[in-house]
Amino acid sequence: MPASERSVTIKIREAAWLATFQDLGREQSEALGVPCGGAADQHSASVANILVGNPRNATGIEIMGGRFSFTTARPLLISVTGAPADVTVNGSKVQMWEPVCVPAKGRVVIANAHGGMRNYLAISGTLVTEHFMGSAAPEARMGFPQQISVGQHLDLVTAYAGFEHPYLTQPLFRLPVPVPSFDHPVWSIDIVEGPHTDAAHGIRELLAAREYTVTAKSNHVGLRLDGPVVHPEGLGEIVSHGVPIGAFEIPHGDELIILGRYRTLTAGYPIVAFATKASLPMLGQARPGQRMRFRWVGQEEAVESQHESQRRLSLLESRVQSLFGAIDLPHHSRPVAAQEAA
Amino acid sequence: MSTYPAPGQLIPASAIPDIKAVPFGDSALMVSIASGTVEERQTGSRKLREILLEVRPHGLLDVVAGIDSVLVEFDCLAVSHGQLAQTIRLAAASRSFEGTGPSQTGKHFVIPIVINEAFAPDLRDVAEELGISKEAVLRHLEASELTINLLASAMAPMMGRVEFPGQVSRCKEPRTNVDPGSVMVAGTNAIIQPFPGPTGWKVIGRTPLTICDIREDPPTSFKPGDTVQFKVVPESEWKRLEGRFLRTDSYTTKEVH
Image (cartoon, rainbow over all chains, first blue to last red; front, side):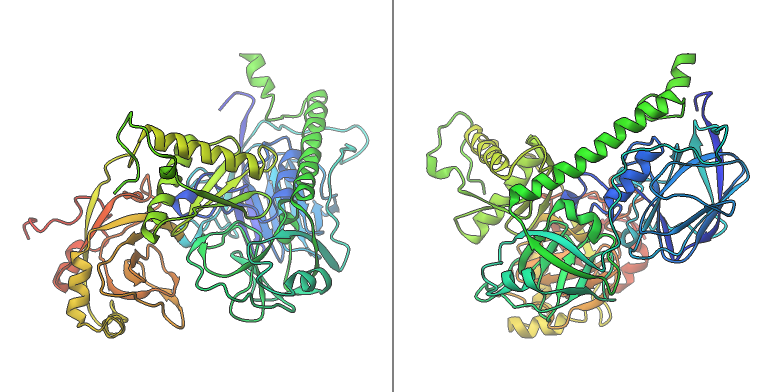
């Protein structure tokens, strides 16, 4: 450990319904039959890390439902993103989607998430955890649950040593943070056509016009939605083949399945649409009861949206880098103190 | 069996596989061999996957093997559907031209299986569907030299071809949970369940060996292209073999008791 880094223990006091170590998932694992997994809302997970100066794919914590709280003896730089929630540091409300300074002997509570499913907590530094195929993301089925429980002590290695502001307990940073809106009761999700769109006569019109509701049968494998569907005709048996995240499948029953990051890699159901890459983070936030509408777009528009969302992340990343450089906060792209000292 | 000629030999254009590439969303292509017999298309897609993993075209993120297809996932900001499809066709054509053939000689595994009522709940069904005895089903399974075509969900080895006299159908109602080690068949394919989970395949035996363990590196000792032979062993062997990690030498009959 470089001299500038220190080891900090984070004590978990409340562990939500489910809290796990999480990152952006496995790379090149699907060729071996292991789903990529990773944060269901990759946008929120990335922003949380960027806001504390970490690489986007650093290990953070994914939190679902209930209350999550922890205490720390030493100062921490954290950020909380995802579904709107109440976040407090030593009882004072702090902003989500911003870097937050936690003082020594601090207690952080994340509670009352609403409008979405998941919160992401990033902490400046490196959370110590095991990896499977290069990632901290859970793979529960294969015996890698990564769940965080009450009383657990997490080890963090960080170069953050506290940040004093003369007038405010929390500094004002004014960063260009792309915060998704969770306000509208009916979400709009962009989709492109699938291999069996034409075989399911009328599905194009239905998906364009009608409203669909996420049901309680949904899980990390896929969202299940209530709403009108038509079954494709004349397809014969579909042999097992790989399916991308966001595929809209129509199973034998009258429902719609939108596959998530822990999908089974081969499936034999007809595919009538795909969510665009840029709309996957919102799908990763959908709870049972969430209503949504779909909007058909072409491939070019889909790629353009993805380009725009990545451009915003890159812009944020460069602003954080120059800001943290100016005020001497640690940033992964410039591990300063250690190297300058050497 | 390879469709690739010897090194240095020119091949007719017709031998270059006719590759079909269909967009699967904004960041994936479904790639398959457009013509040929079922076997040729299956072999061809396995070869395609090997080429892709070796060449790693710009923008490629991951590949997912299907029975007769390969899903190619890519970064849509780095490359377009059309560009990637073209790269894949070029790579496949040049590999055919060089006559690479099957890339390496695979390993061979002998996998012991135990048969009883609890481990083989669908054996009777399979026998009835094929119109042969239960013993004959197992003889056909043991006599088949199987090739691992792909690693399916949770690294399950999917193998072909079992020398059954016909096709085995899937369960009408998929089981919600099947124990690890279960040896299952559907069509003329076989698969081993590495972890507990749901399946619609028919369960006809169980191996005492552990076929996937995430504490091992790599978690499986087999790869696509390796070969497998099942060997029915008496139930008394279960205890001796239970939990052993599957390697080429995990099962030997020579072992002194």
